[in-house]
Image 1 (cartoon, helix red, strand yellow):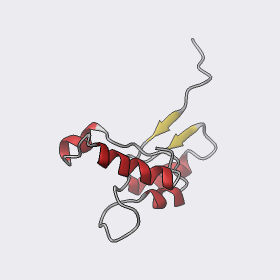
Image 2 (cartoon, helix red, strand yellow; image 1 turned 60 degrees about the vertical axis):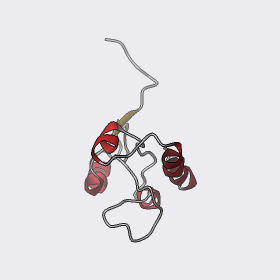
Image 3 (tube, helix red, strand yellow; image 1 turned 90 degrees about the vertical axis):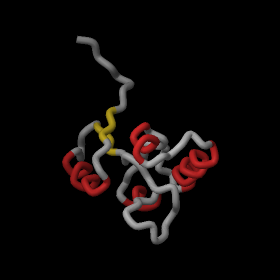
Image 4 (spheres, helix red, strand yellow; image 1 turned 45 degrees about the vertical axis):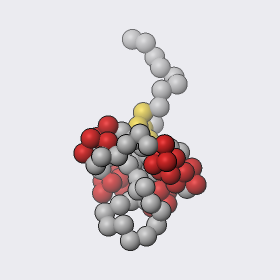
Length: 96
């Protein structure tokens, strides 16, 4: 069996399960990351989770621009959209 020493394992639970999964994986070499984060920062955006909120949960990673978001929510490859979303990640250090 081949050994991999430079592989990072990540799991992406639904946002409401992040605290539970983080607790279950405590002291493991598996990182928890978010499936998505809000296009917007903090504010009244019902149902959205901001990069700042994820950071408060200890989350360092979030996926941006994945295919389900593009298909079901009509998010695009628009450079302005992606720059804005990634800007929130970088500004709030979620590591996206």
